[in-house]
Length: 312
Image 1 (cartoon, helix red, strand yellow):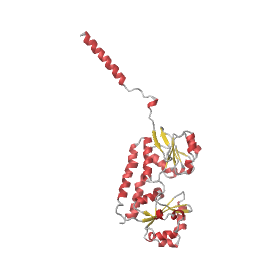
Image 2 (cartoon, helix red, strand yellow):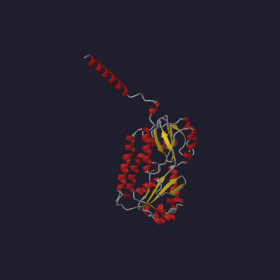
Image 3 (cartoon, helix red, strand yellow):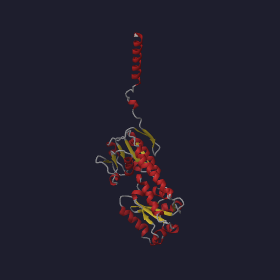
Image 4 (tube, helix red, strand yellow):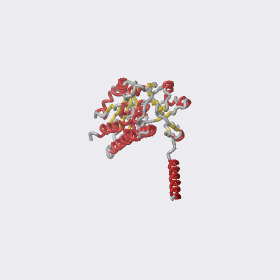
């Protein structure tokens, strides 16, 4: 009996030792999250391990970061004009096209998000890298670009649910709208973008131009490439598009509309165009067709659907 008791005690001790060995050891510093690694629009490999203090030098990109569940330490002045409901502790770091490096550095950011398409942003790359600040450049022109940026941002914030809500759900809506154009006629269109003192034709390589192409349109500036450099009323009359779309850019809506009036609308030949006579000259809202629509992309596509095909 004593031998059995001793054996049982020995067995119990062995079990206790084995149990203590299998307990999870305290996490060491080396077991901390490795962060998120991705390649940005300039081909740089970026690793982000901390997203507590993020500076975003663009109103559109700032909104994308917020849609991903992120918080802002600083952003450019256009963000404050775009009604993003920013908290009072968000710092203004300058203008969209000329963000202030000193203001950015003063915030000691853990990540800076910039545009690959703005020279005032790309010019900051060397200084930010020298300061060892993770700096990511994005280029968003079409919906897929937005979806890619949102995916990266939600991976950084750990909010997969917001990628689903503000990305994949919107993608489904966009695809459904585009699918409705199957079998519809292909309208010939002219797309114009007006700023202070200048009006230019834009082809399908631009954001709104790509959306019009998705909706089955034929952009006359894709074939009449001379329109991109010289907006010729003679060429417009010759091509006589079914629809003419215009959107504005810049701070002054009034100056942009005056440019349209002076450049085209005041020309006596303007009234002879089929699009004008048929009420198919349409001014598109710049918040959806010049600025990036972000989670409102499906709304922008739906507007085009109603204009192009709603009365058929």
